[in-house]
Amino acid sequence: MGVKRKLGTLILASVIVMSVVFWYSLQWPYSTELVVDTLFDKYEVQSTQIGITNPVIWIDVYDKNDIPEVEKYLKAELSKDDFEHYQIEVFSRWS
Image (tube, rainbow, N blue to C red; front, side):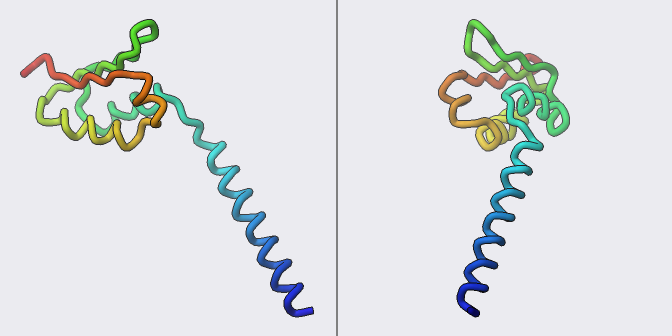
């Protein structure tokens, strides 16, 4: 009986953990726009634009030294599908 009880507890715990992970993932829906908009909070970004007919994400930063950091952030946060679909251009008009 001890083995059945341990197995039942393990299965129940697994179901609970999977349910919590699934519920948590639903709380934060992913969107390209949401990721790009977070740039304004993290870096000194002047403007962003996501092309509809032209699949390009343009990001204009104030300081050209922020360009590598912004590119690194986008690489970490955007989905693989976004990288395949969009060309990403980070630039500074002020430099």
